[in-house]
Length: 472
Image (cartoon, rainbow, N blue to C red; front, top):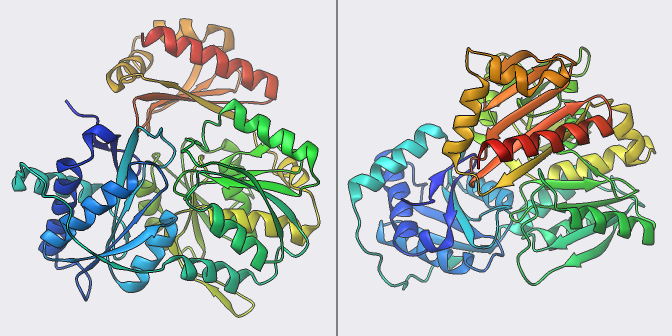
């Protein structure tokens, strides 16, 4: 058995099960798929980037060796944000491999694969696995490839500076840097847009910041920094800088789906695409002309964006409850063009949310309150095997409702069930509880919505305890 598997975004697992032959063989399989489709780019280049976790340099070198041995040309882009690598790859018409475990702990890592057009989809994942089996490699060679190097960060920085101009003039923004690979480019972009970035919490060791399940110490840090300094906001990202964190002037973090909705509002989106885990307020009449709901994971959001465009939407923005924002179509404003970037990106929502605050002359706390989102909270139970999560969901979804009705009797029972991704239960009192297995780690995710903070906190605590007891 191995921990390696494709999840919501890429192949991930324990470092001990990824380093060496597994990395080499999966990248060779990716190259075989590209060659089968004659899709390796005009010069046969494959770009390679990585995050700042301790295992990433070695894994990136092994990726480059696999690319070279497949007869293609590896290009080393160094430690870069995932969206910066994706943008450069699409601009060059080249595929790419990003070495990152995103937010998961340092003992795990992963690979994200990109065609020249953007992220691979679920069909591509299946083909990579089929090529992996067909190649049947039994050993990985020592690393000897010496790939050419390329700067992809400059173009990523220019993308936002050219479009937003001085949109953040006068703002003072704390940047929680921790071990994010995007920590320096965030400061560079904010400065170029007229803001004053204040460096906070830089770390030399990897910190697994999960934008969907923040550590209590991260929340406490934000509150303390906001109390000690006069800040208009505090911003950060996960490890590979494709998912944002945005806190208001009090140090309170805005949920990722709210940040996505504010980004869509600022850019004038007429269609949004978002998973079922995002806030129910998005479906409120008058919020957006079109709302497409999907399963959790960027491949599903990308497919939903393509659907919205095919049905005539002009400006399509996808986002997830974890904050990652995908730009499905180009945006033109005042003669400036922001090209589509259909992969999760932290920089766009950070800048757009701050620009909205600057343009409206309102604090982020007021803007968040005006959105009238339901109180939505989430957390996770770690080290829960997926088969136990599956068993719990199956029992809750069974036609015999006895177990389900007993579990939620205090909340009026269960009024409706949504099975699009895990199981989302609408309770008789109007609250919701959603259970799903993480696609990236042995974790059970629990999401709740309720009309008030205290009720949401109690509902989340109750169902984390319930799920823990049921999955032991």
